[in-house]
Amino acid sequence: MCDPSPYADNLSDGNQFSASGFCRRCNCIHALPSGAAHAHCLELMHLFERHETIDLQPEGDPDPQLSTDYLFGPARGKMFGVLECRDKHDTPVILRAFSGQYNSIWRVSGWAPPLFDMTEFSAVNDSEEKAIKALGRKLDTLTPHSQEWLELRQKRRTMSRGLMQKLHGIYRLTNFHGQTTTLFSAYIEKGGVPTGTGDCCAPKLLHQAATMQLTPISIAEFFWGKSNRSESRHHGRFYPSCREKCQPILGHLLCGATRSGNVCK
Ligand SMILES: [Zn+2]
Ligand SMILES: [Zn+2]
Image (cartoon, rainbow, N blue to C red; front, side, top):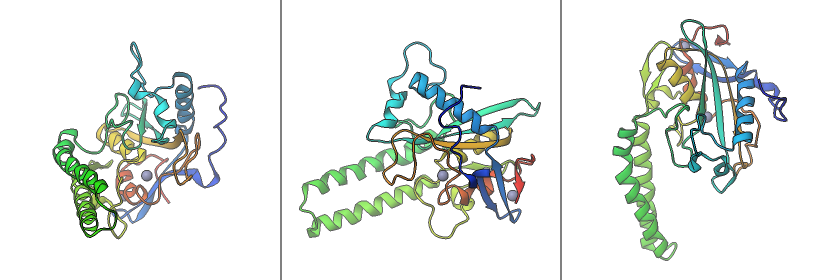
């Protein structure tokens, strides 16, 4: 493991369980502790500090798109996560993820992929996204709050919402019983599925582990870079899985992982 880090001691008290969610199938909460994943996160922070890239297997010149400078610019920082697993021979396997896209990239080698197929994503997203952006440019040319401006703004909102629904429809979430479901049926809260659900580190990591037939042992997530706008995330701090987007789908995703780390609370 790496040298002692200034970030080592900031996992707050309530974080004994890093990821948790209520499972409708088992009628209980499934949870994973931060365990050894915490130390693996510290190691990752150390790598970021030393190499200033998220490229885990740099060969030759580092890819400028993967530089950690991106996290300290206008886009601000993001969450990173580590899932400690065991394969069927009990060999440790460490999975890593970043939340959402990294500098407009969904897939980076060595990091957990998104919960959808990229070809399907492009087919659904690309043309509609272009149309929505064109509406935005048209809006900028109109007098704010004029009749035409208001109508166009409403049209853009409706289109964005429609696109988000369609995109949510292509997410697939596999659990440790090998059951695959959609975001809509995994999400247990009432009301709509919030934007960005399924893009955090925990869902990406658990889905990847389940599809690779690994057993998850522990999980930890930390923020790296410039604080987010609401100042709810700070550089080098650990956070449990988020309440709004992750906890409502983690019951499904954690179901069937039967090591002692994954308990019914
Ligand atoms: Zn989340
Ligand atoms: Zn369950």
